[in-house]
Structure formats: structure tokens, C-alpha cells
Amino acid sequence: MYSRFLLPLVAAFSVASAIHLPAAEPMLKKQDLFVVGEDPAFSLYHIPGIVVTAKGTVLAWCEARKRAAGVSDWDDIRILMRRSTDEGLTWSAPKSIADVPGPKTKNPFALVMKNVDPKDVTYNNPVMIADKDGTVHMVFCLEYMRTFYQRSTDDGLSWSTPVEITAAFETFHKDYDWKVLATGPNHGIQLKNGRLVVPVWLSTGTGGNAHRPSVTATIYSDDQGKTWKAGDIAVPCTDEWINPNETVAVELADGRVMLNVRSESKAHRRLVTISPDGATNWSTPRFDEALLEPICMGAIVRYSSEATGQKNRLLFSNPDNLSKAKGKEEPGKGRDRKNLSVKLSYDEGQTWAVNKPLEPGPSMYSDLAVTQSGTILCFYGSSGATTGLNSFAGARLTLARFNLEWLTDGKDSGKP
Image (tube, rainbow, N blue to C red; front, side, top):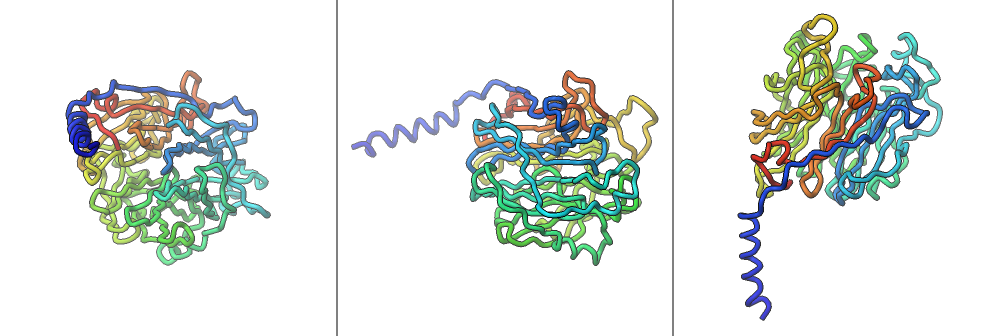
């Protein structure tokens, strides 16, 4: 009786709901997750990252730097993380999540620079991947010289003992004589076929801050993080593509992988290259004219896809600015990190139909994630109400929670 009379009603209600369900009201809310001065042990928070696990837990992490100056990538740095089980409304206390036992040696290319303390321990460039099976994979670096892998099977409450995977980078030596390495930063991705992909950059360590010159590539795992391999060099360093470095990745609707790359190129645009598998046969890099490059980290994530009954939607964030308040605007030189904006593409990054400022003032590195209910999360560096600690990292890391209706001024709505 129930199937005879109720099922048609349920089906009809579902169709009607899908057709007539009103769009949500535009929503934007912000909260600071890490603020300089709240913990006397740390003087700067930088390199924000964020993912949503298969169970819906939100993990937000960063580099916490101890030195008073706080301006060196080679300072005493720890990796801190906070958890939220209600889509970013409330958060656990910060917790240090990377600890490599045993003696540690400073990268020799750091020691030739001024004001680098050989006793400082530098954990750097954390990257997480939320696996569809519930595992959270994490890679991070030590002294821009060694790379480690660990995993969590309880949504970030605990982590396995770090395993060194630096050997995976040895393959790169045949193409590039690197002395300094870094993963990500931001989140990595898992492809539909299960492959884990982490963008990396490599440097000979002979240029500025021992980070230049540089090239970008990926490392990948086809066995749930047990082993890692090196892909091809994705963006080399040339007269046109100058010092490609911090890179983000997204899987396209057709299964290809697109890298979106920061560089110091004179074009001041983001670089884009595409691979059929996230590791090899990268296309000739091109500048995306719609994506300004003030020389700062950016973020990219998929919001939805046609495969799940929605539109193809990609989100991108970075400081949308090429002006400079102090000094001369020179090709290939950094511009002011401000006007953090979020862009939306309906054609897999070929064009960007929406561009909306999220933080008009000083705003820096960012990462993006999408909750299971469709709320967009942007975790970024800012000055907030506080005068910026410095021009590259700000005084706090802020989480913005907003919906598609806010981003599109009510012109689009949907769920991931």
C-alpha cells in the first residue's frame, strides 16, 4: 500500500522541490582563526590551507612562525591545525601536527644568508588531500630539503608517524639540479581514478632567499600514499616563464589535470598548463589574461560538475591587483597584496564569468574548499582591523564562509 500511494507523491514532491525551491539568501560571514598576539609563542601565521574531509570535517592549517621578525621562510616554524565539525562555525584549539624525530640539519643554502639561525627548525609547505575513502593524506617539508608523508584516519584527530619520501624527488635531478624543494602549498587533489597529486616547486637555491631560480612539477601516488613518484617538469624557468613556483591543481571534467602557477613573469598573469594524468605530458604553459598575478599564492577548487547533475563550476582566489602604493611598478616585481577576490568559471577555467572582491584591503595567501552543504570556504591572510605586520603575510588568518548566491549576486545557486 505504501509503495502504491506514497512513492508517486514522494517523486512528485522531489521534482517540484527541485524546480521551485527558492535560492538561498546571499550569505557572507568572516572569522579569524589565527591572530598575531593571541599565542605569545608565535609572531606570524602564514601559508593557510583548508580541506573538507569525506565525513564533512573542515581542517584548516598554517605555518606558525616563532621569530620576532617573522619575515623569513627559514625561521623556526611549526605547522598548526584547527578542526571544525559544523562546517566552519566553531573550531578546536590549534594543535601542532608535524614532528620529525631525531637530529635535524639546516639546509646549507639557507646558512649563506644573513640572519638565519642554524638552530631554528623549519617545517614548511604543508599540503593535505581529503581522500574519498575518509583518509586525510598530508605531505610537508623540513628545511626545504626533505619531504615527509603522514596520514590521518580519524579526520585529523591523530596522525601516523611521518615517513620520509624525499627519494621521490631524486628523479627530478635528471632534468633539474635542485637543492631546495617545496610542496604545494595549499591542498592537493585526488583524481577520479584515485591518484593523489601534489604540486611541487624546485630551486637550485642560488638566487633570492635561496628560492630562485625555480621550476614546477608534481609528485603523485597510485597506492594511497604508500609510495610517491616524480612527474615531468610542468613549467620550466625561461625568459618568458620566470621562476614558476607555488602551484595549485584541479581535475577538469574530462579527467585532465590543470595547474595554476604563480611566477615572477613580466606578464603579471597566472600561468596555466594541462596534463592528461596530472604527472606527464604537460601542455605548453600559457598566461591566463583574466587572472592577474601580483606575485602571490592563489587557490583553485571545484565547486560542482555536470557529472553530478550540476553545472561545471571552478573557483579561484588570489589578490586581484597590479598596483603598488610605494615604489615603482616594475615588470616581474611584486605588487601590493590586496583586494583578495574570488572568481567563478563555468567552462573549466577557459573564462571567468564572475569576479567578486572578498577582502578589498591588504590580503595575501588563500586556499579554497567547499562544504557538503555547498558553503564556500576561503581561508586567507589579512590585516583585518590591525595594521599589517608586514606586506606579505598580514596579522591574521581569516576564514570567510559564503554561498554561491553571495558570489553571483543571486544569479546562480546550487550544491556541490
